[in-house]
Length: 242
Image (cartoon, rainbow, N blue to C red; front, side):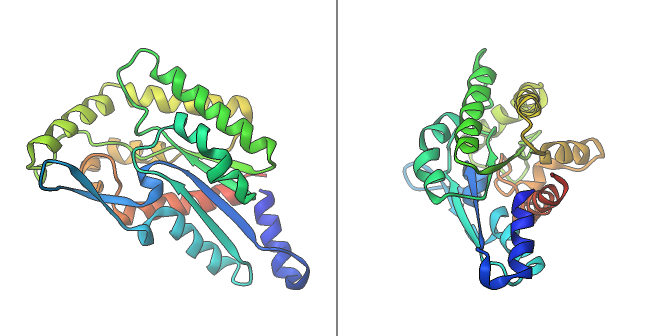
């Protein structure tokens, strides 16, 4: 990708080249959300820990590989966000920062049983991609992690159990698969590089790995350790795409 070339140029000629800016547009996983807990009054709250989010791991990897290059990270993740809202805010939250590369990751909150949810999801992604391309940003679409496939024995709260029951159905009945496949099809038609982390999670699952226990909230937030996998795959994608 051009961003890799830009970092290499900065390394060779530190005085005459700029650093790089990478923006991350997405939902709670991008923002850095992990465990959940129930507050007094029944409201479910999330633990935010951006230090262990995948974009900060990307930052650490790139700083190791290119120690002379300034890497600016724009975290435009919002808990509960969907691609439709991402399209509305991409100008103000991402494009105004003039990123060299934007990583887009949506899907967890779009996964519903609605008959038109896939079409709405894909249309919003296409709009985001068009805006980013128009501003000159390179793009990677990163597929999200799997959701839980069962209700974890560690989930005891009645409200969280009901949420977990619903997401497990969406994950195991093919609904989530259909959303991700549609997004990947769009990317291939638009020549948008795909960092297919969802496929890796699926391979783990089919190899006998208990996916549910790799989620910090036992529903849809990957653990801090699994966030590192996103980062490694993203950097790998940066180097593989021309």
